[in-house]
Length: 95
Image (cartoon, rainbow, N blue to C red):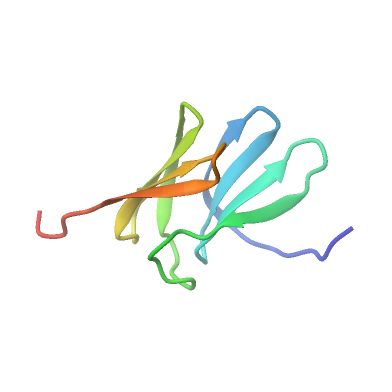
């Protein structure tokens, strides 16, 4: 068994045998295997500070993509699970 680390999440979505989670206190998209209960850091959100808290408070799963709705982040992040890639939709801070 690996090292135990305590962390908090802001939201989670389920796919098949996985639970995807956004970290509360740092920049991280995590994934837990439902069978083994193993949690791994899958990605960090591009163009965001590592130590920023509450980057994304809402996750929505649509057609194999996780739409990450920002709170403190600069953009909407869309994570493609199959391709392991991010797409960003910048926010207009003037509106």
